[in-house]
Image (cartoon, rainbow, N blue to C red; front, side, top):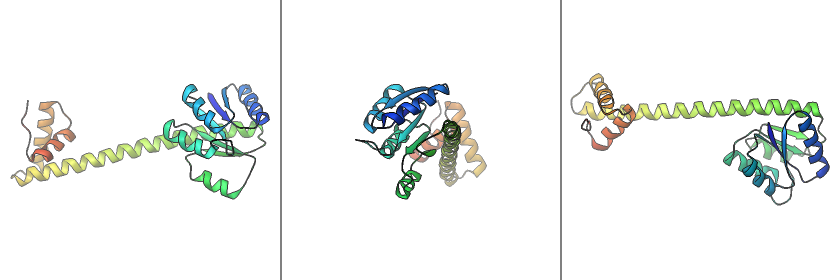
Length: 190
């Protein structure tokens, strides 16, 4: 896996890089948050390990930006176990929080958990999007059926008319329903 490490402390950065290389990962490093964002854009890592306190742009801001622009599993790294930092981190879409110094077995476990949690979150997000789209389609179809029923069709006839028009025009029922709502009638076929 290609992993981005961002830490302003060279000893920590090089130590993490050595551990990750030993585990078989490809590593890209950055010395501050601004450089981390640039390296992420250029190298397209599959995971990021970010120190919270860095010059220019802190790890919390980098995590927020990456989550929005290049979603990936993110682990935050700090020498501090301060409660306010932990609370700020819990509001971010991150998958883990590590306190320095880090042992190889802790890093291995954190990476595995982060990857799984990230994959689970992506799957849930996709499912939520599908459900929202299905609900929106259902609402459009119901509104279109209501318009057609006002013209004297039964609910079954209205739905069948939407389906037949969709088939005839090689469109989705959703698109035909939108057209019905817009024109207040079944659009001409062909």
